[in-house]
Image 1 (cartoon, rainbow, N blue to C red):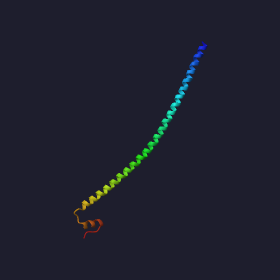
Image 2: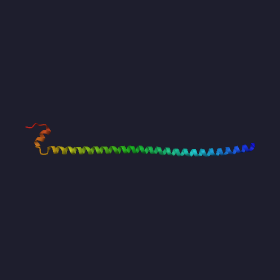
Image 3: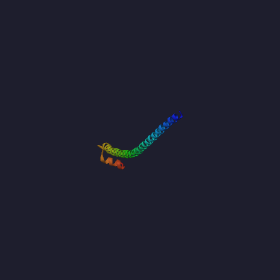
Image 4: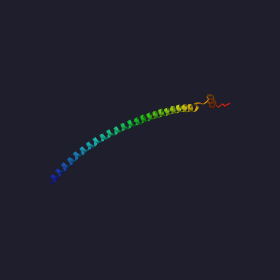
Length: 104
């Protein structure tokens, strides 16, 4: 009976040791996969940072272009408004107004 119990326990310990080794191998595999995921995440983070810089630069360029366009349009509109205001008026009177000379 003692021999059977010892043999039974030996088999159980042997199976347990085998399962522990398999578990350790599996854990090492998971560690390697986690390391790969971490490296991929770091690479993705770097790419996102580069993308953010690129998008910010392009948005700033677009803002500058839009601002320039509005300034140009505003200047053109001002010229047209002045032209309309002065239409039909005496040119000498306009010059006097512009340069501050009193009318005689």
